[in-house]
Amino acid sequence: VLGTAPAYGPLLLACRFTESIVTGVSVTYSLVSVGIKSLTMRWVEKDTASGQAIQHQFSGAYGTATFIYNSGEYPRIDFEFQGIYSQPTDIAFTAATYANQGLAVEVNSTNTPLVTINSVACCMSEFEVALNNDLIHSNRAGCSEKFSMTGSNPEGRIQVEDKLIASQNFWTLAESDLTYPIVVGHTGGPVGTRSTVTVGKADIYEPSFATLDNGTRFINLPFAPISTDGTSEMSIAYT
Image (cartoon, rainbow, N blue to C red; front, top):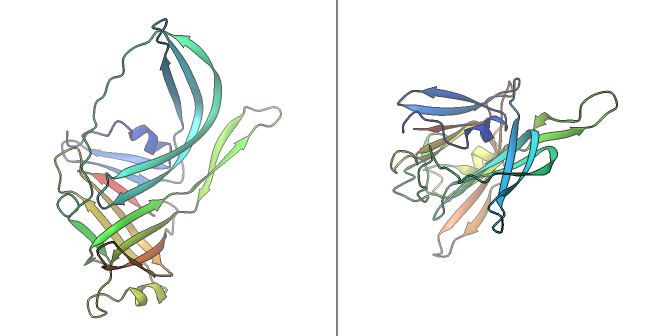
């Protein structure tokens, strides 16, 4: 449903995002530097012999995330979390329920019609951007054990088909001291599968060549998402 947060929304909040919902229209996740939410995570494993379950839990957890859009694959988010582990307990087993999550559609020309670097359309093979949040464990005398998020060092990479210099000069972008917007719009599928990742200011560096199976020459463009306030390196919108 448009304007409904995905079921994994709480995971994004614990990775330094804030959630903005426009009912019936969109859900947008943007980065923050204060007020970052932690979460409690539980893993429930059914005991087939008794019909009961064993619950594992950790709390006060923070994480980091990598957003990956590779052609021919489903888009995905790789999460990593750290929190305070609790001893497992026996609980009554209840069946899982699934809601607020559409079936994925693969990254291709139909489902991912929008890819731009500096507002110029590109043919993309691979894209990823990682937050690389810094998570620190503290267990000092006289206070509670905890994890904290102390900073981040985001980085990314996009692989696109090479072009004539007249169309777009990737080498000039890499040599320049300026930053450039990168947008990947996975917006061609049905409602519940559409997302747009925006890196507002990407510092592109060290381009290199890659040749795909069909002999087409592509170019790898590593980049560092830049923010002057620590909150605008990237955003993701579901529409």
